Amino acid sequence: MHQNLFELVDELKADPDYRHRFQFVFNDTEIKTGYIARALAQFQRTLISGNSRYDKFIRGEKGGMLNEEERRGLQIVQEKCMGCHQGALFTDNLYHNNGLDGDFSNEDFEGIFQGRFRVTRDPADLGKYKTPSLRNLFGRAPICTMDALVPSWMYWNTIPVA
Ligand code: HEC
Image (cartoon, rainbow, N blue to C red; front, side):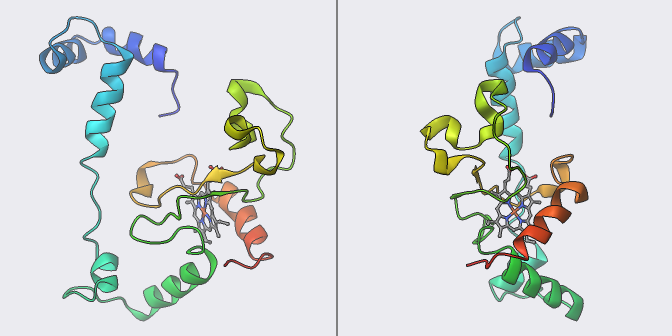
């Protein structure tokens, strides 16, 4: 959401409709960060996309037709992306440095710009991030912008994707 959690609490508290809804659901007159996390988690559980035409195609089910252009696109994705974004959730659940940053000296926000290193303190993990799922991607801007993707594609095109 790209928003400070505590500012969000204040914004929700200022809206009588949200106050009413939170009280109804959590049986508490306070709006707490934990309730927001639970509400978001519940919302995310409704984002189910495993029955798309693509999924039906992969499972060989009725209605799973891809046209020629879509098959060509899938082939590119298989070649360039599914080394990491693989399986039903489009993730290998592993950590990779996708080459977007070369400088990891910024230690702000508990080292969030340093990637997995912030957890392991292993220099080999600098700039590594867990491969995110590509399910329900449409709502996740601005992370997924062409500005971010194009340099990455250029980088990936120079490395073998295994
Ligand atoms: C070497 C492994 C690897 C390959 C190959 C790869 N990705 Fe990723 N991808 C990642 C990682 C790791 C991230 C998370 C990066 C971050 O958090 O900074 C990511 C992030 C993304 C995101 C942002 C997702 C979000 O939640 O906003 C998109 C979109 C994406 N990749 C698409 C692609 C596409 C399209 C291809 C093929 C052209 C591809 N990736 C190839 C590892 C990979």
